[in-house]
Image (cartoon, rainbow, N blue to C red; front, side, top):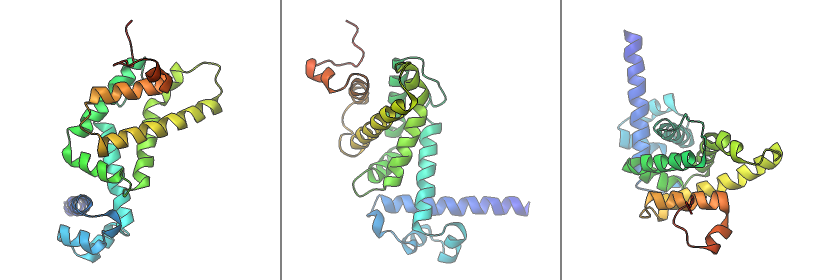
Length: 207
């Protein structure tokens, strides 16, 4: 029983510190947040903080990892192996709606993906997206394409995709999700020439 109480106390303390950090992220620049700030907001002393985290970077990384894991686990299609492009499109819609439906997470992502944010978080977002789509994309690429060439294509596409989603989260969130996804899918599979040739509303024309 004492061990259970201790575990519960540890979880409570770590959670309180992380929530305090998130509050501060929404109020002030990341670079100006200190351990003293976090402890004051959580009403926890500094010695207790250092029992759980080494410094601000340590608790920031832990918090970012948990946000990414939350996004991964709560996207309805996160375990699906995509059979066609429509399923990939559906994943994107689920993914963006899951973010938008959690205003607090949405605001934190806006900060972390901004120019004053944290490149580590953006890289984690890229990795999550890469892992989610690797199987589906591999299935739809030309069979004769070499593994190294595929890797280069994935790298280019993922970077652009995450950059676009970051821009949506920080500066263009009023754009309807279905329009964002349609634009993204069109760019992914057809490139800029697709949009230069015609003003299509969907990345999957039926005509």
